[in-house]
Length: 311
Image (cartoon, rainbow, N blue to C red; front, side, top):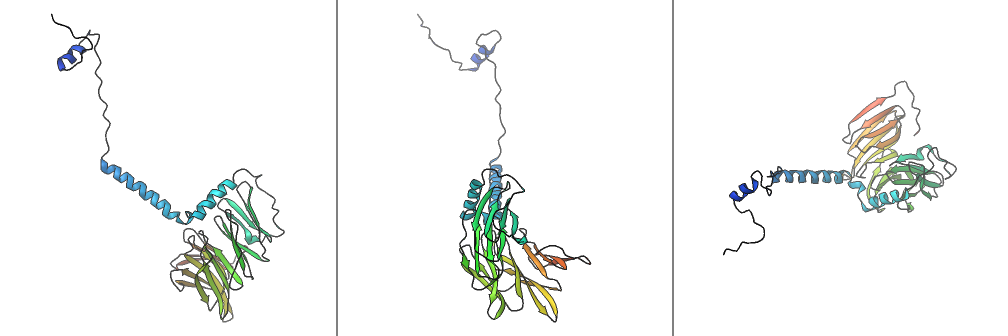
């Protein structure tokens, strides 16, 4: 007597598959076609990975000046301090009695105002982020990003304020004639110099001087630094043969001497700016000069028109 095996019967050959699949069989199952997704070749994954790394590297390179620990900390603190809303503009400023026209700036979506007594920074909604006192009798301010350079024109004191850190008062070697600040916190000061018309000293973020140059022909009136503090444009003035002459020097701090010198006859340079794209703009009372870092320039004369802007 043959004993039947209990339990499920497994399909183990093609005949069984055909039997289970014939019409009328209660155990018949529909055959499902397998969906096959196309696979990318491995070399394409490598190309995508290389492109992503290249893009990330370019972003880091172009923003390298803003990725220092102090800049990152300042950005975080500015966002924390800047939380909340102000009452909007126009806004009343109670930070002193006098604000010189050149001491009012809009930078990095904030407004910086330097009065005769204090430095004030407001955000885009007029909320006060910073207010710090200074003791300079004739303050002049320069701003780049979240940093504000304040120096005493004709004096020796200067300090750098930021949202994340209060400024430390420092003393220059001689009376200050002009100053500038870079995006990474480097500072350049033009001062009087014994035996020369002027001297330019460039300080690192730690406050230590790493570059100096003495001018023997011109009194320095303006300095502008590029974003990384590795180059400078310097304007000076002198009287020669009974006429006023202005000059713009171009410096690369890797070289001990100016890389270029541009002379302007009967044109007093009133302001000097170093753009983030490397273009330098020298605004004078007779013409405006657009200067490239290699020393090339294009002048735009005012003709019979008079310059009405304030320096």
